[in-house]
Image 1 (cartoon, one colour):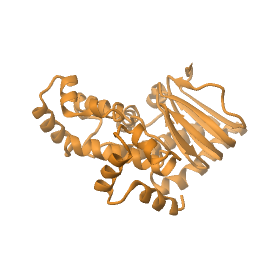
Image 2 (cartoon, one colour):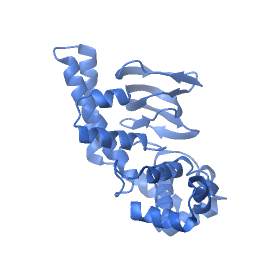
Image 3 (spheres, helix red, strand yellow):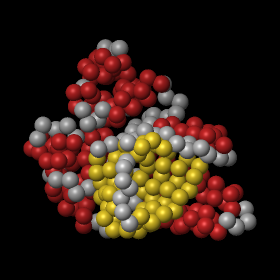
Length: 282
């Protein structure tokens, strides 16, 4: 596994690839990847998702990732680090919020753009950044950084949908640590039981329940259920994994267990949900 570092606040790359890179890599920085054309698979942290035109992915530091290219793919890469966020001229109140959201993004599979309006906004923005990058015209740096800042804010808005509404950058450090722990171990059911979490954080089960509800306005089980559902839905929407494969990757004992869980919370089977989503024009 190749490790890549960034030696400047941000970096833009615009490239067409016909073949998959020989090996995956881990970054020490954030990387936004936008697909302008082409198709294939994004592989991240041992999960695989189908990509196509207008999909965007966020690679967070030390994620294990690579791309498997089926059709020649034109990628836009935006790489940036905390130094850029701090020095990019964003309002101080927004800097803390954006850093918090990106650092606590967890493993978000598939395309990160949730809002249809944002999908329409991002492509012309990416194309404008590419034009500035290629043309190097007057005030090129200033214009590029303004567009990059806007793009990062749009990404942060979409990622924020994964976090409880009551959590902010000012929340206690312990609740942020608990949420990050849950996101990190969401594929391992035994590690996210209240008894296991209580043991890791050195608090009683009864207090954990009250503490979690106080700071998130939902129970621990409600949050875990909601987060698992979002991950399952993304697999159903954006991957070609079979239902039994999804069940395995999400830590269910078998396909029937996943079916029961999904039907209870969504009122339909995973197969029916996938068919319904594929009727929608993305």
